[in-house]
Image (cartoon, rainbow, N blue to C red):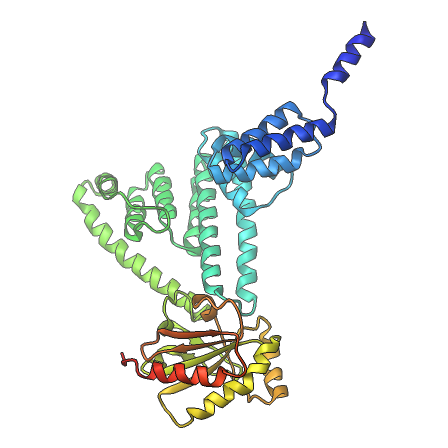
Length: 415
């Protein structure tokens, strides 16, 4: 009897190959539906809990949980993936948020542990960004990292507050506010302070949240914010109307914070926040800086190139012929703009080639202008608008083609 039961059990267990075929078929049937895809993977794990692919499937389900905003999947698979050693920042962020939304104490403790791992990674990333050399859009990247760090510290504050540690919670919130002032951070501080009976400080924090506006968290709710401020003003001052004074003061504080933060980021990256040509400043191999706003009213010809680009070297003498045709004209400016990632290689290359000592660096301009290939000769009209793009070059016609486009751009009206 025992032998028969054993045979039946072995027969009932499909071999690994059959299980994989079954999974492949289910995934094909799921097609492009992310929900069906996740369901097929989850069903496979339940049917084959000892699958050799379990760890990989769990990682896929954790990512699917983020994409689908599925809290159940996040808690079931995201937690297991993190416990298995994953330090994926996006996963840590989303799982922490899901845990915080649960009222269970063990979930708050786990959220605190995860968010501290997240904050530690983000602090390290910020330090590396601050000490690293130039990278395109580095100001925006630092801004994004500091915003993520502020979010992590705010989550840390929430977990600590939920665990009954208000002083530690406020310290974490203050660290987040210093990294990047956000609506969520101000709201969290207001909640912690109100819970601690510190109503005047809570009112100030709530007012800062309103003064910051929608920030990156969505549209504000004016009526809800007004009621919230009025309630805190009543607790703090015994007068609902007192919130107006708090709000005006908060606007002043927030405006000063924003101005100081923008100045700091611009000192780190002069082109941080640049949305138009006029707002760009280009650095150069000689140390001088060029504000493109100073060229308004002129036709600007930009040669986007790189030291490693063979066609750029072939085009250079043709480009110089065009430059000679317009020599002496104060309303035509030629700029050589390097797209090299290794900036240290540019000055020696210029000297070796005998091209002179000056080349500007693109400093994020190529990204804004969507320069996807080089060499590219770009002509800007007198208003600073892109008048012409010449991707690559036709050796026999390049000089005349570029010259004609410059003459046409000269006919455009000045700003």
